[in-house]
Image (cartoon, rainbow, N blue to C red; front, side):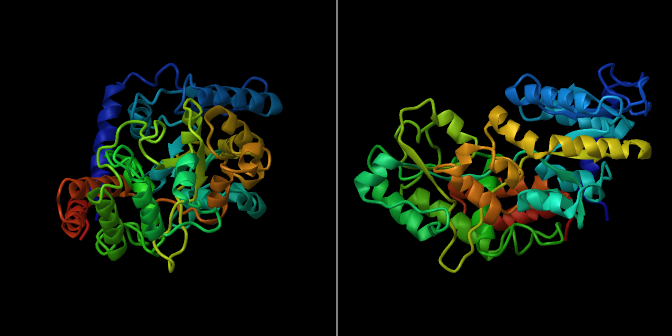
Length: 434
C-alpha cells in the first residue's frame, strides 16, 4: 500500500513542477542531454545547497579543481541553489526536477532524506563505484546513513556529532571530574552533576528544549539507541513499540524530570551556556566556532549513555552526494568520478576549513590537527566508535516531527506515555501504517 506521506510528497512535487512552467528548463539548469563537449570531455551537471557561504565557495573551488584535473575527460557544471531558510528553495527545486525529469546528474541530499529519495527512485546505488577499502575509510555511520535496503545510495564529505560541553571553571569549583571520550557518563551521573551545578542563577545543563525541529531527535535519539532500541523498527515503517517503547519512554521521562527538578529549562535563554547561565550544554559539532566569540573556559565530554548496562551511542550525519535517476547510463561513470572527487580525503579536510564540521573519512581526520587533541578529539572518537545514524526511512520526516511534538507535549504537561502513544497514533495516520 502506498503511504500517505509519499502521496503528499508527490503532490508537492507535481505542484512544484507546474510552477516552473511547461516551457522547458531554467536557463541555469545543466542539461544531461549532451554527453560530450567539443573537447571530447563528458559533461556532468551538479547541484548543491550552498551559495555564498564559505562552504558554497569551497564547492566552486572543488569543481574547478576537478575540471582541471580531468581536462579533456570530464567537465562538471555547478549550479548553486539557496536553501531559503529551512532548505525550502533547494528542496522545492529538487522536488520539481523529480517531477519534470530535470534532475542534474549529481546533487546534494540531506542525510535524513536518503530513504525518501531512494524509495522514490530519484537516486541510484553507488556501491559498485567504490572499493571495499575506500568505503572502509568512511566513518561507519556515513555508510549506514547512505544505505537503504542494503544498497549504498549516497556518501558525504563531512559529518556531525553531538557532545556535552561544560564550563571548566564551574566543574573545578564544584569538584566534578568530567567524563572521558572512552568512558561516558550515565544519565544518573549526568543528573547528579547537573544537580550540583544548579544555582539560583545558573542551570546545571541546557538542552535546547525549546526546539520543535530536527534538533530534538538528533540530540536525544542516541539515548534511545544506547538502550538497544530505536524510534522505528528495522523495517523502516513500524513505529508502535519503538516510538512509544520503553527506551523512548525512559528518555522522555528523564527529560521531564530534569525540567521538573529545575536542572534544565524548558524555555532556555539564548546562549545561556556561553553567557554562564548554564554549566553544561548538549550541543553539536558546529558549536565550537561560535564559542570562540565568548569569554568561556570550556571543555567537551561525550554524549551520555543511559545506564551502566547500556552501550555508548552518539549522533551523526549531514549532507551527502547522490547520483540521480536522470543521469544517462553513458555518463554514470563520470558522475561517479565526480562524487568520489567531492568525497575524497582532500575534499573532506578542506571542508573542515569551510564549515568547521568533522570529516566523513577517518583519513581526513589525520590531516586536521584540531581533532588530534582535546576537546575535539571527542568528536573523532564518537564518529569512529559510537555514532549511529538516524533511521533511513521513507517516513523519517513524520517520525522526527512526531518525536519532537511528543517532547513538547510532555514539557507542557502531558504524561510521557500518553504523549508517545499519541505520537504513534499520528505517525500511523500520516503514513497509513497499521
